[in-house]
Length: 414
Image (cartoon, rainbow, N blue to C red; front, side, top):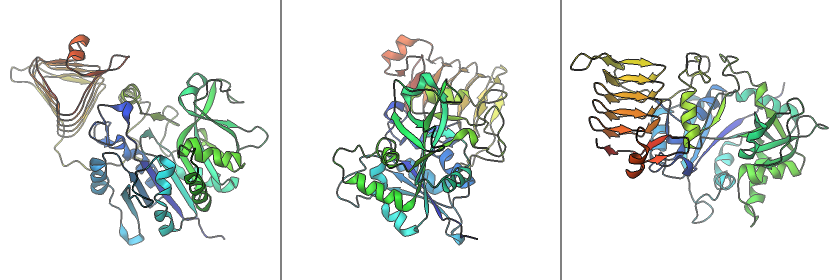
């Protein structure tokens, strides 16, 4: 019997997340709160830990303080078996420069791979919402003999221009024929003409092949030093790149409704839509799957509380998630996600919204189709998402679909 492969996990978490502004004005994208009590990074780490990986590093760069703190406070592994999740900021090991791309981040962090000496390296992004059992992808990678394997998720053909698309080789099952970056003329899959196989940003490499690839890429003056744009094509051109269809992945506890769920929350609209996926009776993404839990920091808070307000008005909560420590007094809450320690006063209304932690909603206030960052305060009778022109005049971000975003710590007058 051959010895088991040693597997090392790398999470790429240095992105700026400009399309999520103002939520990323003061924090790294993977540190953005999600689903009430989680951070986006928790989904990536949970998937690796649930898959049996015990040595994981998170490469950070942009405004990483809250991300680094969250990782250090939350992801404490037992050192008995040399298990860890470690945040590693940009170290400038190859000169006085920051990461110029995701491949350059790995190139500048090769000391981490040298120290652990793994056989296989799993490289994933830090800002997608999904569940995935990487053990199954690892088995497929080893069996295929490929040097690199790219995870793909089926997406509508009409959305091909939003993703890196895997063009499969019908004459060589499991190999990538071409890797197309946001193509306008993509063709559908042989077994599903109305779908393409989009890259999930999750990769598995033989360690020695990855080291060679990023070193070669680092010497190229024309490279963008990107994992999807440069490293994957490097392996494709050599005939060494395989793909793994997420459709094959069977996560314990998943249902037909949420199996193969994957959401790139890189824009305000997709971030908002992903929250709406959580709150239906039969959610499209089920946070309550205890066979494959999404772990996060344990919040030392009392339970959420729903009470009458000072004049006896009774509130209600419909199709919503309310986090620990929140107190809603005579509030109508519907189709919304509320973060920890949010207080809402009597007669207030919160509908179709995402509210981060420590938000204060004054009596009689109205919040509709909005995202409120932490420490936002609404005066009594104030509104957000109700009067578009007034919200624009206040400097709030409003998407084309009509979602209003209020940045951290803003006081909103009546």
